[in-house]
View 1 (tube, rainbow, N blue to C red):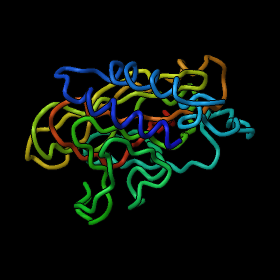
View 2 (spheres, rainbow, N blue to C red):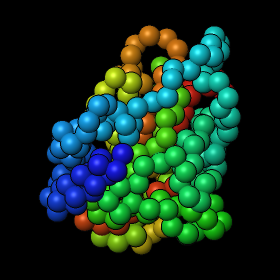
View 3 (cartoon, rainbow, N blue to C red):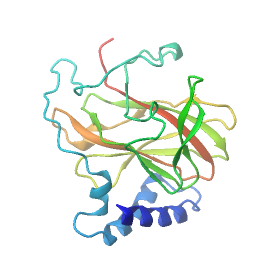
View 4 (cartoon, rainbow, N blue to C red):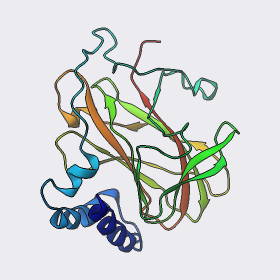
Length: 228
């Protein structure tokens, strides 16, 4: 784990200087080097390997993951879909369970709802990787809150799927400089890339700031396509 963090930190810092870089380029550069430095299981497996596959059966009607709760957090903004909150993406002040690399951190700030608490701060070149999150084939999209603290660019979003060694780019989070929190457009989670069989699978979301600005992110919500 320490080998991965050291290698990832040094190389992602270099990548951060490349204007117009993409999430795919970031991963392509730093993950192979980290894997070469690892012994036994690859560094990728050590950092992003999902825990044992869930054994609970999927609800046949709604095809949702067991134990998750759902709400309509964006109803006032015209989005009546139900969402489930990714662990520690909003409520935990410490970002527990997230891998924070190359300057990514949790800082005290004003959250999108006006309360005070922890938000993810992503300076240029930083990377944050979520804890394993359960999804099914019926979890098509996700949204998050983002604000531009300084500079320009955006935060690229990727997803690690079971059996993959690099994340697949699925979208980006952008906001107007100095305008506070903005809700991202829905981005495609593409759960079928983790296998086309029915049932649950665990994925990890990746935030990578490959631009020159500084961004903050709070609340990653995944849409399970419930009937409503």
